[in-house]
Length: 475
Image (cartoon, rainbow, N blue to C red):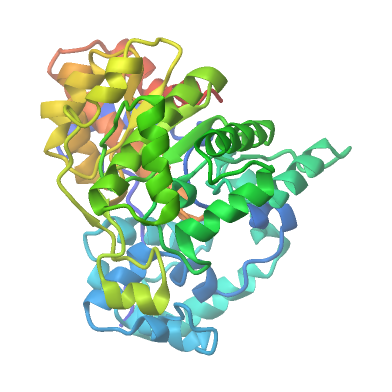
């Protein structure tokens, strides 16, 4: 028998009644603030074309690696869920998801999805095998209406700005179309900006469906008119594309390196290393050294052009070799690794760490580094800020641990609020709601313990929910 789906108004707030009342009041003051989404992976073509999303499976199951990685871990085949398999019946894939929905009990995905089901689509019963077709038909029908087109949902959820993430090889035609729409009299005014993610032309070991790093270098040359197989031409190409991205609204760059390693080679040493990279004669250690040098080069460029630099290290990408070979990148097999920041960032910080006009936001998947390394670093160097709990730690417990382990050393104002870092569009308001509830609970506890005043908590709630992200990302 299907059970009712109800979202408790006090969900995620502290259990202690005296603290819960304080948290409830704080949350009420920020619940309706606009959403600033400064880093994520939604598709700009959604907002450029404003086409309907299709069916429930295409929107909520196939693109969401949080969802299908859990199902895969329990023995379901990715192709049966519609991953890289256009021949699968979307309803059949949805039924598989629905009959396994109990696997998500207690997970962030369950919270986000239940919010989407209840708040976005008005479902009043829980998803299960018995309600699979009801869900599929209801959601698919609603997705076909104008109210569920991308721009309408953007406006409905009070999104002030959203940043997508593109490679330097992207022509940004969808962003150009959005900007043209914004400029048209009576046109849609949603603000969608890009971010510069140069990994495909920075990582010598980068592999994709189009030939990987070496082929990407040639395309980089074609796009920029620079000789990207020479060190000077390669750096000039980055500067050119960064300027183009900035002209299309970008305020940030993003770097997803395996480690946080940086280097500070001389110009001749860097050119010689690049020669090995271009020739394909590099070792694994030299590939790591090149990535390290490029983080320092990118920091220097950020100091020149003002783009905020984000570093997302510490993920062993595509750990499952068979899944990668069959289904490609980003299929739920990226696994966190131990990450050193103190020694790894030292070359970059020796060169740029005291620059007040440089802004570098650090993320980690290694929570052991929060109190030991990241908070002390951000609590000292003017150029450093801490990104929020990310990816596997984008959860109530992860957010609490982040605040508990960083606030005492870095404070609140060396952090940058919240970003959702997702390609699951409808989960964005759900994720921001979770972050606001958790932060309000944390602040309420500080008030209850007489560590801050209630008016300070009210100001902090606004800052953590809205102001810090706008300031950190120059929005």
